[in-house]
Structure formats: C-alpha cells, structure tokens
Image (spheres, rainbow, N blue to C red):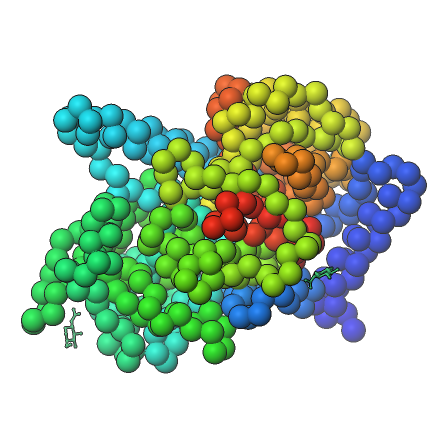
Length: 469
Ligand SMILES: *[C@@H]1O[C@H](CO)[C@@H](O)[C@H](O)[C@H]1NC(C)=O
Ligand SMILES: *[C@@H]1O[C@H](CO)[C@@H](O)[C@H](O)[C@H]1NC(C)=O
Ligand SMILES: *[C@@H]1O[C@H](CO)[C@@H](O)[C@H](O)[C@H]1NC(C)=O
Ligand SMILES: *[C@@H]1O[C@H](CO)[C@@H](O)[C@H](O)[C@H]1NC(C)=O
Ligand SMILES: *[C@@H]1O[C@H](CO)[C@@H](O)[C@H](O)[C@H]1NC(C)=O
C-alpha cells in the first residue's frame, strides 16, 4: 500500500490536479506546483513516465538521467548543483563557439595556404546528462551510452583494455571477440575515407593480413578516445536491428570520464547514427527527456507515422557545420504576457543541444526574461548571488505559484515549457546569457524536458510535441 512507487505516482497525480485547479481560477498564466515535485525521487518512476511511441518500426529505446535511480549503472560523479551545471554549460557553449571559429578560420587559412587548425575535436562531454541503453553485437550486450546531439562519432570501450588504457566503467567491457557480427573496417574502404575527410582518422593498423581503420576523437575537458573503427549489429528493440552500425571500438582513452560505457553521436555529420541509418529512417529521430531525473523518456529513430501532434519550425545547420542543428526564436512570454523584444536580437539563432544543460540567450532577451520572471516570483525570497543567478529559497513553502514561460519560434510555433521542470533547476531559473544581441544561443536540455523533440533532418525542420513523456 505505502510502497515508494505508489507514493511517487500519487505525487505526480497530485501535481497535475493542482495545475488544473489553478487554470480553473482564471489565473491562466501561472501554475501552482508542490515543492515536493522539485525534489528528485529515490525511486525510478518508469511506470508513470514511459509512454509508448507511435513508431511503426518500434525503434524506441528507454532514455534516463545518468544520476537518477532509473540508470542501470548510476554515474559515480556527483549530481551537479545549479552553479556546477551553469559552469559546465558555459564551458560547453564556449567550446562549441571556439570550434566554430576555428572551423571558419581554417577555411580562410586553407584558402590563403596557411597551416590548418585540427578539426577532429568532439564537444565537451562534461555537461552530458542523459543515457540510453542499446544492444551491441551478437548476441546483443547492453551498452549504456551518453546521448549527444553535439557530436557524431559513436564509440564504446572494448576488451581487451587494461585500467591504464581505459577508464573504469560499471558494466563489463564490450568484447568484440565474443560477437559473431563484429568486423573491423578496412583502411581502404569508403567508410574509412569519409572518416579521414571528417578528421576523425587515426592511421591504419594491421592484424595479420587484415587492415584496421583507426579513429580518434578529442573532446573539450581533455577526454580523448582512440581505437578501431568497426562494423557491428546494433539492437534498438527486440527484432529491430541495424546490421551495419559503424562505431569506434575504443582501446585507448585519456582524460576524465566515468559516465557511461561510451557515447552515441546524433549530430548531422556522416558518422552519426541518424545519418548512418538515413536509408531506413530518413534521417529522422526524436527523443523525450523525462521531467525529473527519476523519470524515464525515450530515444526513437524515424518519424512517427502520424505527426499531427507536432508543431514544426525550420531547422538549418549551424554555419557550415553539419554537426549542429539551429532554430530561430522570435519571442518569449512569461505568465501569459508577451515580452517586448525586438525580433532582430534573435538573428543568431539557437543551437539545439541536448548535451547542454541550461539555455543561453543573447543579452536583451535574457535580461527581459529574467526581470519578468523575478517580478512574477516576487513572493519568494531570492538567494543572493554574485553570478546574477535567479535562485529561490523555497524553504517553508509547500506550494509555489510559477509563471508559465513560452518560447515562440520561426513560423509562429509557440512551445510552453514544462512548469516547473522546464524552467527551474535546483530552484534556479535555468537560463543564462550567451553574449551580445544577435549572438548565437543554445536551447538546453532543461527546457526540452517532457517535450518530444522530433528532428526531421531531411525536411529541415524541428518538431515539438507537448507531454511526450
Ligand atoms: C596496458 O596495456 C598496454 C597495451 O597493451 C601496455 O602497453 C601497458 O603496459 C599495460 N599497462 C598495464 C598497467 O598493464
Ligand atoms: C586479430 O585477428 C584475430 C583473428 O581474426 C582475432 O582473434 C583477434 O582478436 C584480432 N585482434 C585484434 C586486436 O583485433
Ligand atoms: C493523425 O492523428 C490525428 C489526431 O489523432 C487524426 O485526427 C488524423 O486523422 C490522423 N491522420 C492520419 C493520416 O491518420
Ligand atoms: C532559506 O530559508 C531558511 C528559512 O527561512 C533559512 O534558514 C535558510 O538559511 C535559507 N537558505 C538559504 C540558502 O538562503
Ligand atoms: C497548497 O495547495 C493546497 C491545495 O490547493 C491548499 O489546500 C493549501 O492551502 C496550499 N498551501 C499553501 C501554503 O498555499
């Protein structure tokens, strides 16, 4: 009767009852939430959060927070505080921007015949928070992989690898010798040549007469991975198998990592899973990040057969950078009131990055959002902060009345962020400043929570669906 799971379901039901009653009072721009809903539950709420996906291929895999109780092997590093999340988010944003600058500089320098900047870098992985569990090899062995829309090449640590060459992971290392479908990719192959043109190549090794295509990726924060680019069967769901999945079998790692068995790249370059499987799934994929770290969401390849529940906004690559997806914001409302923001300050667009935590907005929209939010939350004490953060002390409050925040994108698509989980992280407004007006920003993963985000890469559009998980 009083099992923790039962309690957890009750809380969810209670929370939604409160929000409905708030709307009935005519106070439509606000939602009353129980402060208990801010706290991470100790128990995985798989039963309440996982909704079936309308995908005919059934290619959906569960997605969970790596620190939450649903993670098969929880990360050993500490869950981040808001200050830490903000720091990690900024490091990742800076890193992506410096790479973009390096990439454009490289083109100019190549034209001028100057030396090139290395371009084989992946993004910073420190801010990655969500993992999916997939089956690799035959028989399929479960692998817990970080989900990254900001990089392309996927990899897992492979046996044999000792403790000085590979970081310690919770699950046993993937052992290609035990899989009947494993094969290293030969050096002369087209796949290996593409790796070269995308600067992930790392020489060629011989095993007897068999050549093996080497790969390497270096991330911000110092993590490097190196090994053999390989071909393997990837199982998404029972009976849904990608026969020719290309990934890095990692035999040499350096730098900090204790987060997962590997990484799954969902960017727009040829090495990513959606691009590799575009013949089958049209390059489309979607995911839903759960509302709290004790919930379950999903990652799915392919578009749903009926996308009538989605609102779409145009999506373009970021500069010449195939990896990143960019959308444009046109307006923001707080508590049902549209903020007066000149449209041109949004010109830089937002990089849609599930590997970043907090959303980054140019200075004018950030300041207007912050002041409107603070005004709407004036009943609660702000915690003083040198950083200019908007963090509240909810001690002593059993309910909190939180304004709804909606983002409007090109094409008039308005997306209501989840209240409170799409707005608040650790009691703090989960937005920060990206730079001056017109500067590129980021749509972070807090804002994506509970939305099904459908990347229709071929159709060059991003879809949002409310209550996805
Ligand atoms: C780990 O393996 C590498 C390569 O096989 C070897 O060079 C190194 O000495 C080994 N280190 C330890 C501590 O066994
Ligand atoms: C080399 O090839 C042999 C035979 O195919 C295989 O058993 C072995 O695991 C391979 N070694 C590496 C390092 O891939
Ligand atoms: C798609 O779903 C909507 C709402 O559920 C329904 O009205 C519509 O008929 C469906 N379209 C198709 C082509 O099945
Ligand atoms: C929050 O408020 C409580 C009670 O008013 C107080 O004891 C506590 O120190 C405050 N915490 C912070 C971080 O300001
Ligand atoms: C919280 O909400 C409940 C249900 O609407 C209400 O009975 C209670 O008085 C509220 N508590 C506070 C402190 O506002």
